[in-house]
Image (tube, rainbow, N blue to C red; front, side, top):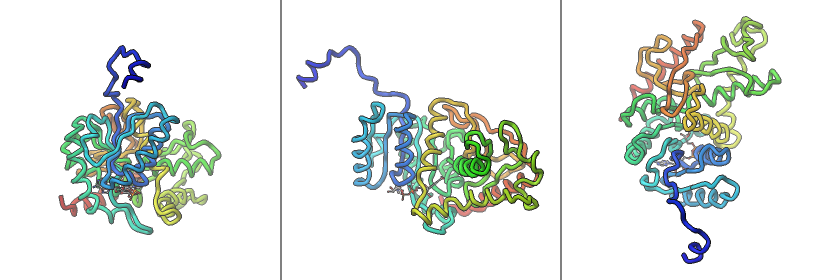
Length: 331
Ligand code: 6V0
């Protein structure tokens, strides 16, 4: 346009590949909470959204684009055709069915396997070097399924896993201790959800292990019943779903933290779903959460966390459950 030509004297080609492109598949509650926090936290300003629901996609895209003046030169695109996802660094998958009130996450498995079969090959066609970050439930099994379908090396397929459970745990501990969640160092590992394992033996504040102050903390024999904190974590999603119909903000923030760790090559440690074969005596080829070092190549290391016998047994039980569930999947 002539006016543009009068205003601008072009000196350079514009950069097209900003190296921080993130695709989010599924613009439901989880996907949109993630996109919103990615954009508002400035983790990326280059976002593509994909879904099968064209109207919802367009509506969400327009609504966000109208907020561009409050963002950081955001490039927000959406469409049902995967070609727009080309050259994404990270693809977040938050598509598929979610739990109804009282429904177990594991119940969703086969329906979401079918959804993944439609999504993963298309993503890889256009972004063969991307890291895949799975949120759809049951997230551990679906991370395994995504790894299988994708044929990618294990370090490039990551599940959001117990990063969220750990955050819920740290929040509840923070309320009891009157200390910020960021200073409550605590991990939940194993399955995201029902059989998750709180690593009470290493919960610490500034290196002070709570178990050194209360040798029964988290155990049945604990008179102070700290174990209840973990029960509340397991119940969290059920309770929120009962109250508002779905969960969104906390998982959106959790995924944002993981995307940021990968994009910035942070080498920070997060409990995420990865292959756990060979860890803690697990022989099955199953995917569960353990603390992992995340960076540009995905999972850079798995932390060899010392566990008590009780904790190891609980993780082992989660692994057996996962193996049983995986065996029933129809690919
Ligand atoms: P939602 O609000 O129903 O959104 C799902 C979206 O997926 C919809 O917009 C659908 O149109 C879209 N969709 C369905 N099939 C396809 C497909 N083949 N291709 C592209 N898009 C498709 O669900 P919500 O956002 O609440 O949940 C999404 C998934 O995340 C569910 O499996 C949840 O169980 C799971 N969650 C995982 C959590 C975690 O901690 N990992 C936490 C909360 C929910």
